[in-house]
Image (cartoon, rainbow, N blue to C red; front, side, top):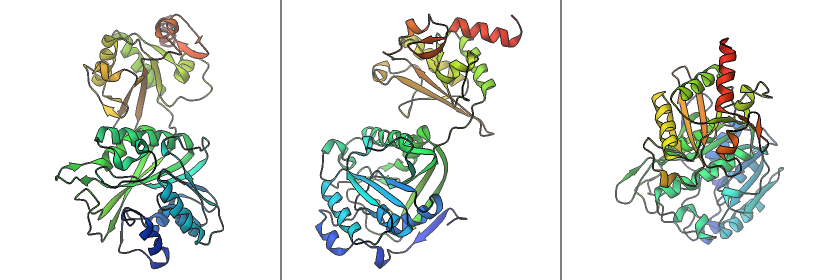
Length: 382
């Protein structure tokens, strides 16, 4: 597995199967469970003994059983109280020298500390399944009717994972594209990868192949293979000269903006660290938002709103309450430049921020006038 991108798993080992008595207690006979074997592979590749491994969709506790066998500390979150009980029962019968814990909670706001998790390892819930679980229905991924809502649900979980993973920690998410009951193909693994890439840095993929023949409930997909999407919480240094050039191009294009956060401090000559992206504050004006999207698109950027690609003219009614647009440009040498453009910011109004030169409400601000002057100083024209 270390040197190849795929592995063929033929069957579950008898010693690590979910006990038949527990399967019979489940409302769907545990047909959606994962295998301990698939989890153990990634535990040994991406974690060390004693480290904390987190599963936001714990289900029957498969990941935690693997953690017990491999000497990792396991923490799982599950929204279905009946499956929490099944997982705890299974874990009670598994010999472990490390602590394993299952919490009844929502994966979107699980009670974990920031930067506390070494590895997140999980089987993501599938869209199109007709499985019905217990617990709050609004928190059940299986009951989501619309694909856009399903992706928004996943993205909220990925946002939480980006918060709780330690710097250098990894996410391994198992998922497959599906064919729905009516024969429609849905690229949910690839869409999930796009969302993960908006929160973490995607590193690679692995493919697991199985001898499954039975389709998932509600779909035509047998899960005969799955993608393991592997990402890392990492901040790569931004190319400051490329960022500076971008700001000049936006100024020349007539965009109204201020630079805030770490990049603002860079322009002010007082940056404590190298920024990972450019944070802009824009007026909440449809014309200015369209201009931003048009300018950066012309400079090779992809523009997204909450992980969804958008183009000018924008759907401004849909953008209300979303607060920011994200623009990313990837060069063929691997260099990347990312811009977060905030346009609804009640704690930092644009008109107020644009009048300040250094800070506004405690946030570093470099105004358009200040940026222009700093650029001229750097160019030697002042």
